[in-house]
Length: 505
Image 1 (tube, one colour):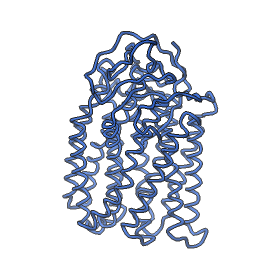
Image 2: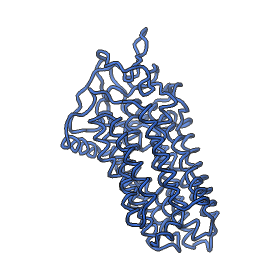
Image 3: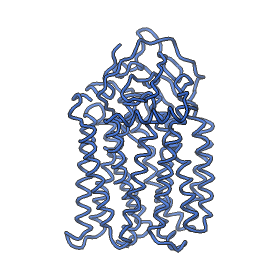
Image 4: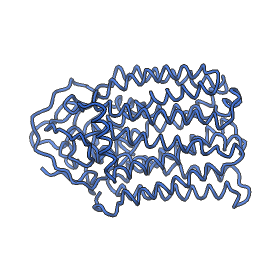
């Protein structure tokens, strides 16, 4: 049976009605020009106990992936993984090969959806709840703003490097064990941050917090790739975006309220409690999604060869860099906005939290419009192109406003520009994630690690640059945002080259 090109979206593709809240990260889309061929279905794979990971398969006539089809007259399998021929994947990890069985259309329980959403929400929660406290941390620890911004950079760098380790490890050991270890270390590191006596120790344990928290990001994304393919993967990423998108809305508000009751250390007490609760829920309810026969058996050498093969795929690398540079635009905003809004424009921590929440609502809303109305109807590359154009224009407008070209500009025009920029991320992030993952069905953990690492590394580099001129001007933030947006456009056009692929891709 010949499978459509990975990432093809045909008008009229039937989407499953069983995915809770299926809409638009975490994030949406599909796109690959490489044709893949799958052999006939083989004997049934190993049965998994009822309720494992809360996942069962459903049949979808127009799924666009052979693993989702059910022969006439047969009932869908009730295992966590579809019955399919097990294929040995090449250690080279070349992208765009035949899809590994296991990514069909499934019914996922609401509880598991919420748990995966919680895992993707933990990083923004860890970053955004802490944002209103940055000026206070600067004063309390007697350190300059640029040094305290390194606490954000350290956490970002930890999340980037941690994914490089945890992603391939989860391809070898399965998803559950590395996830639980990472969550336990996250809780311990966060608790120690609450007692940090100086900026240096805080930076060090924020690095460890990021390294451990990376497990939640990379493994949640890999689990989605284990369970879904094509448009359904796009829609499930959209659902995760809805759940994880709540974190940036409520986190600064919670952080602002915590600061009214206690000092900045209270933020880490709350994060410790959240991490502990999520760890217990993962331990009790989230089961394995990667069966034994699909795990990689090699060591570090195979993992490196797999990643090298993925990076050799120009289109995969293009989407990875486009997403990473767009993420840098986002993190330039996250890193600079507490100082821009509170120190330059004189807003209170509560006003900053409100504005940050409104911007996050914009991102969620556009993401849901993307997933519910655009996925399956509009080419994902077109959606991505629109998003990139919007953040570029918004970055240019912010640079003109903050540099004084229009004279002295108050908070609200700048806030409006940031709102437009943040909202456009709902078009970009789902598309880049799924376009890239559609090319890597055989190494979801490693691919997820590369996607996450590139995003967080570029974000970690961009984050301190916004404070390079001190706290008196917002121009560095706007410059970093505009430059990263232009570079993202360049990667999209130069590496992804969407015009060279089928109009349906």
